[in-house]
Structure formats: C-alpha cells, structure tokens
Length: 101
Image 1 (cartoon, rainbow, N blue to C red):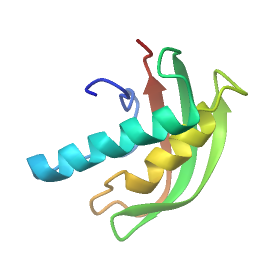
Image 2 (image 1 turned 60 degrees about the vertical axis):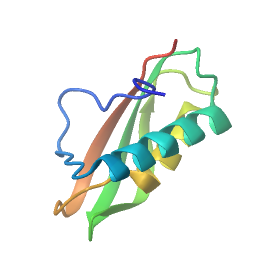
Image 3 (image 1 turned 45 degrees about the horizontal axis):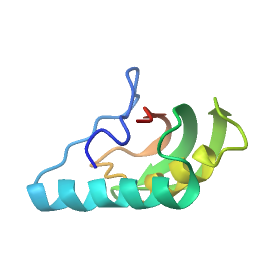
Image 4 (image 1 turned 30 degrees about the horizontal axis):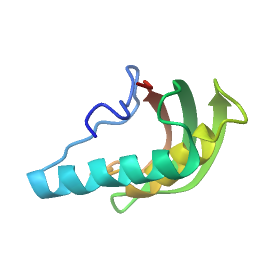
C-alpha cells in the first residue's frame, strides 16, 4: 500500500504523523479511498482547497484534476477527510499526486 499517494512538493501545509499506528491508519484510508473511487493503475494530480481547523480539513473543493472524469477528484476528497493537519488553521491548498502502478 506504500506509495499509493504522495502529497506533492510545494505543499502549503506540513504533515507530522506522530506514531506508527496513525501512519498505518492513514495509509489504509488512502488505499480505501483510491480503490473505491479511481483506478489504482492510473496516475493523476489533484489540487484541493480546504479549511483547516482543529487538526482536520473541511469544506474541500477541487481546484484542478489532471485526469478529470476518472474518479481521482472523489478519491482526493475522501483522503482529505483522514489527512492529519496538526495545528494548521485557515484556508489551505492541498496538492495530491496519485502515482499509479
């Protein structure tokens, strides 16, 4: 399941996974979202804009999707629900890269 999704360079947020348990749970969420909404063999990049507060993202919208119509927008929105945000607050842009296999 590793390398299913990579949060790309130029990220306006920093992610800190503090334990192996939370990292594993997040990795499982990524795999679940991708397999539910998109083809894991295809590659895509998606840019979201979300509100960050209390360690979570909400009110996300898709700004860009390099593979429109292939479900990566839905997969990115699903992943955003589980993305740990730490203490970041306010509007953030969240780039996601789905590398394919």
